[in-house]
Length: 443
Ligand code: GDP
Image (cartoon, rainbow, N blue to C red):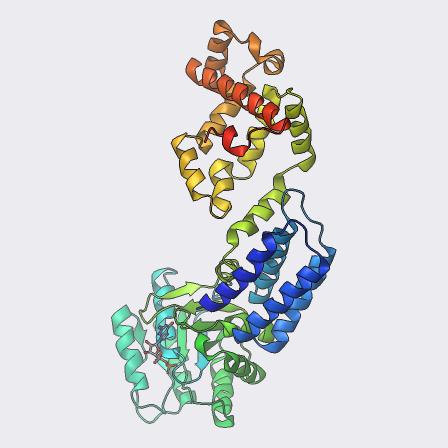
């Protein structure tokens, strides 16, 4: 799912991030392409419109965080709007009602309703330790009730005994009664589907809803159906009090439009997604993760977030200025280390920049990991003010004191002092136009 959309979007946005400055026209052109990509992915037209309008508004008013490029900023905005379109973070199935809590499953035939019923039952029984009863209300398809019974055996969840000749509403009543008498926490009601939405189906669903008074009414929809899924959701939502959506076949190679549109069109949360035929292939729906997957640029997004949160651009500039003048002392180094740590350490920062794998490996080899950063910060904080300003006065006895104070060894103190000297030298050289980041890390 989402592969072709991902390819398109990352292509468009990649081109944006590579530019230094962005004009209004650049953003407009990119948005036109984003719009086309979304439509091709089968996202509902009204959703696409709302999406691009929102991005445009925010891009125009956005203040670009100092340490990122305008293109990266646009990626972040597109990402945020995508997350909003997909809905808020995973909403769990709500069992907060007097038991037995009824969960009614509705949807078209073949959408994966029965499978999903068993998947949810399994999850509630195993993870939430609930006593679950499943009942098939599908009297139309002769094998449906039997199918659920077999699934129940597989996952060790009870099913309501089959009684021939009962109507769906009668079965619903019997299921609720059996659950009350049997001390069940949850009753899963698997209803019949049809090939298409029709009045007979809707009337039956409404009757069952009235009889069982379910706490959750979950629409099971096949993610491969694209635009149709949206119409389906609308139709069910008009007649029933839908509480959420379960999207199945997210493992398929659909274009993903349904996933993007359903929430926006119905306002109902996508609570779970099916990712395969096996009964444990059910996952929570995390808009952030899905958006990350669709954009393929989660790294830039977190880079912008972290930069916005934590880098104090003014401070960084002041340090850079001092470096250029060759006045880079250990207080400055400590500040740098703090900033690095705040944005997730060296590993964090480098891991976020695409294509930096090679450099990262070299740094790993140089052992510049987060533990080292912390140790270095500890060493500096064990120094006196005078020592931090004038590291050259730190001789053997002071080193011993500093090492003891920071719980490190004299050689660690030596290493830090050496690193500081090298950095100060490189910074000075950079200020004069020589060297670069590579030299800074000795690569
Ligand atoms: P129902 O008619 O809505 O009850 O649909 P079923 O539960 O009988 O499912 C129809 C088919 O879809 C079965 O072969 C399931 O194994 C399959 N299926 C259900 N959910 C998923 C899913 O998330 N991914 C995949 N790949 N197949 C699924």
